[in-house]
Image (cartoon, rainbow, N blue to C red):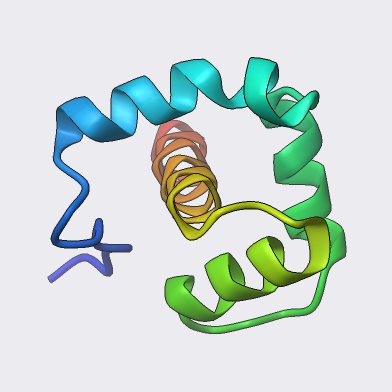
Length: 83
């Protein structure tokens, strides 16, 4: 069974899509910048730990931090599977 970074119970796929679309406007940074911050930050095993760190370290709401971490995992898995 493949490892997954689950969405919160309150984040539907539609909510995730909307959060991701608003991230550049709301945070002032695009996803590529947020992904770089995740990659250069501490190595946490759990998605929830990474989202908490991102929210605490960069002043994000938990909803945006969770969406960024989830999107990072989706794109990371896609890259790994296509290699």
